[in-house]
Amino acid sequence: MVTSVLVAAAMVVGHPHVQAALDQAVAKNGAPGIAAEVHDGRERWFGSAGVSDTETGRKRRPQERFRTGSTTKAFTATVVLQLAGEGKLRLDDSVEHWLPGLVQGNGYDGAQITIRQLLNHTSGIFGYSNDKDFFAKGQGAAWLGHRYDTYTPEELVKIALRNPRYFPPGSGFAYSNTNYILAAMIIEKATGRTFGDEVTRRIIRPLRLKGTYLPGTEAKIRGPHPAHYSTLFSQDPNPTIYDASDMNQSFAWSAGGMVSTVGDLNRFFGALLGGRLLPAAQQKEMLTTVETKGGPPWIPDTRYGLGVFSQKLPCGVTVWGNAGATYGSWTYAMGSRDGTHMLATEINGDWSGLSVFADVLSAEFCPRGSR
Image 1 (cartoon, rainbow, N blue to C red):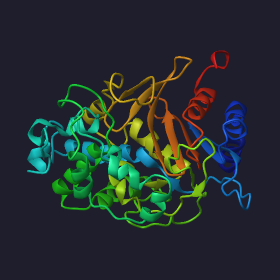
Image 2 (tube, helix red, strand yellow; image 1 turned 60 degrees about the horizontal axis):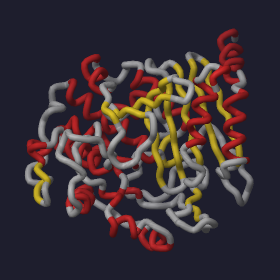
Image 3 (cartoon, rainbow, N blue to C red; image 1 turned 90 degrees about the vertical axis):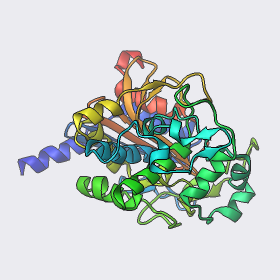
Image 4 (cartoon, rainbow, N blue to C red; image 1 turned 120 degrees about the horizontal axis):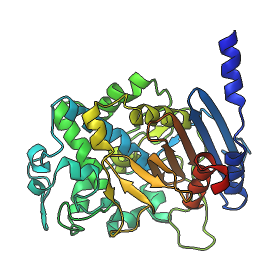
């Protein structure tokens, strides 16, 4: 009885500064809805603003599932690092060693690119999602005609390689989804199992992430979820907003295709940063970061590790985790270096900007006088 009362009390402890930032995301930044959950020791707090569905006015709920975008990369990197800890692969193995002949031509040589360089985005491999023809299919009205297209990992790599590399391997940082497609292909080669099976077996099931899964080609989100509202990358100052909830995300797969909840993301990143998913040596590798400045634009004030990144907030506090963006859903899951204090946030619209997340993170992690 006493335990139940304490848990109930912990669930209702307020986070007024975070709630104010959520309210502002809707009132001033135009987000349709935003949800956030804090895990701080044994305390859990959920807050929201706006709606899950603009037609019905349905409110955001803790159990809602959403597309996580590139937050998926942390799951992919975790599996790779577990395999390294088991001696089934080495981070300094070449791509050519595991995927012979795949990354060759047009200036590419897979023998010169390591698994480590895939995971920290220093491989120089072009991001297939930036390919001109590929992007054209995903923009505006064209997306409506291609939303259910299926892509194989090999097709995505081929799209990337028809473009020149960003730079020689190891000589810079350039965020590229292709890196994580290749990483998952290596996982499958090293284990003989599908990437989805390995993520489920190694992470989702042990952590009891009941709202998390890899949909593959499945177009509808299972269970309760917010509508995913998107401008479809329109450049119009007053764009048409579409419901992009239903789509085949095989185009994102291991780089950005997972579905999860704010609670599940906190549990995952809490376990990952807390050292409960990786041996100490692989934990150290994961948290060894590279500079993200100097290449194609990415999130300011960050350094990238292996599937996670650190971000220095305006107040000087550094948080760790990952983030993601896809049609109609932007996600941030960050927290303390040891994983004991986490905050996961999701917006079910893709136009309000990154400053919203910085405001929410600062509200939770920055001392009051420095916000």
